[in-house]
Image (tube, rainbow, N blue to C red; front, side, top):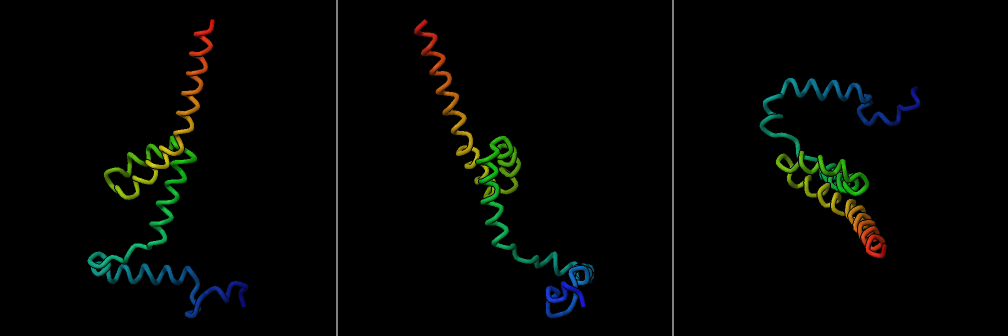
Length: 110
């Protein structure tokens, strides 16, 4: 008996068998799948939104292309890397402003 036998589910099929059965069903019922696509997973959408926000905050230069790519295709998803970009980029703007102010102040005192 395999160590992973308990993870195979009630049917006793492994993942490979499930995938083969899924694609066999998909080939046989292609028109039905096209007419009635499965509902999207709400957890996937939530993870995409939160993940794209985190990417926008931590890596603002990756959040910017994500925003522009998704702006027309997926406007709901495009909002999150855009907001993350603003949140992540604002400390850079603040530090740049302080540096310019410091340089201007030292230049004026010379």
